[in-house]
Amino acid sequence: MTGEPTPYDESAGWDLVTMLAQAFATWASDRGRMTITADIEWAGEYNPRRHRTTTFWSHTALNLRGVRAATDAAMAARKSAETIFSRPAPKSTGAQIRFLRRTSAGRAVWARAGLSVTDRTIGRWLAGTQKPNKANLARIQEAAREHHAQRVNSAQAKSERLAVEAAYALTDAIGEPVRFFDVSDLDFN
Image 1 (cartoon, helix red, strand yellow):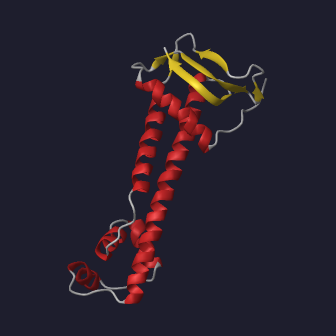
Image 2 (cartoon, one colour):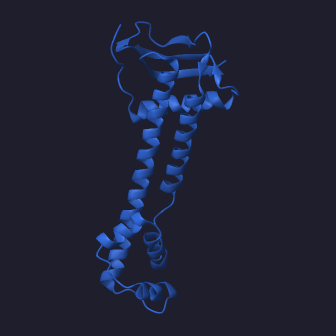
Image 3 (cartoon, one colour):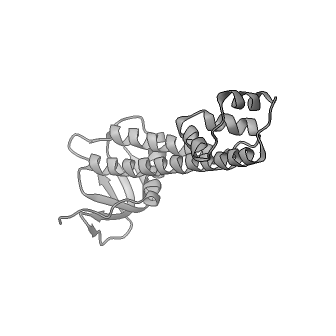
């Protein structure tokens, strides 16, 4: 058999990463054997035995350090994305202004919204001695919603990318062109 297996997409990557994280939670080493129950595609061809249990190892045991690191990074990114997603965009005008002015990405959204006021005016808005006019208030609110949506999308894309990278890290550790579908059990020993 020659060829490459079907590429991992975000959903399949997350399915595998979730199983990897559960297996790593109960395993203290970075080397060993991996037993997996799944549908397996080898070098572009599906294994005729559906949902088969297979053990992977090499004569020196699989080096899973990179797989563990990639899995941990994907899980951390997922947690970060969930945190960002669960937080609503700021509601008060002062919070929205600080939210937009805090980062370069926020400042770029601020500029695209057409908010070209001086730092002194921003200071007065934040101090409460002056309020933005209706047009600027509408621009601030829209820019804050846009910036929040960008942050959510960016965090989700990062977590999905890292999940796929973790899935490929496992393929690299095994050293074979293999792809796992519908994983129901994964264990290290």
